[in-house]
Length: 389
Image: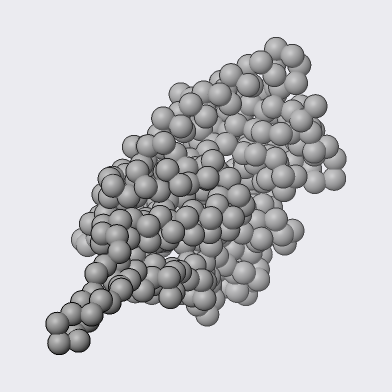
């Protein structure tokens, strides 16, 4: 999911992972808090933010001068004092910063309060929001136009399509979409007046034009989006358009179940709710499959829930997938030079969360990270990994 809005001292971003997550420029500041969309509850946001800022300042005072602290905290002060910012929050907030950059995520789900200074960014809550296990794309289609969306359990947003791309049936069919049912032949009538007869019914011509247009939409979505993302595709359209589109579609990512309603009759939240009703069984099946794969891998000595062993394997690029417990924190860090773990205190500005560092390392090595609630984890140790070989 991409897009950003620039401000003077911070950027509001949507893409994950952001390049900043893999930079090596400590110290890193990670702040998370729940927020609210509507008044009066959104008035609580700045008060909680002030308290979390104070925790960060106290942590920084251990190792940094007042001038250095002020420089690092300036983006946070700007956010704190920006009334417009707090009037436009969602359900959660993440602010991630180092000496040179500050990025902000407005999150579509609540997150637990956290304010930590460490040698790496805390990203587990972001992985939970953006993880691929429940991401889908959605095609809103009628016979005149189409739109595309990407979403997950908590969020859905429209995909920006290049304005030069033909979108409407008129743009796509061009001269072919000349009221073709008006194709006429003239015969001499009394007084030399021409008599015109249409060839084929209006309904037949409308169906032909609709099929031509839908074939274009199907090809465009498949080649430009589905083949690239490999994400499930949900169709939102009137019932009769479902039948036509599915009969001509060659998109293997199109789900059998769709939303039978006009996209224009639904607001964004209704679309998200109906889409998640379709996606939830796939998500649950996917997590069940991952857990079963881990149990099989552990039985074959190609999986583990031992943090020292997994950290070493991640360092050596041998972790294909790691599951991490959502709310668990193991204070410490991973040595970047050898993959060894070092236990510590979460309040130490040079110490973070081992599980978070592990997630970051696996992502950096192109492995998959899945964050699960405690009840879905296959291990009581807070993590479980499947190795590449």
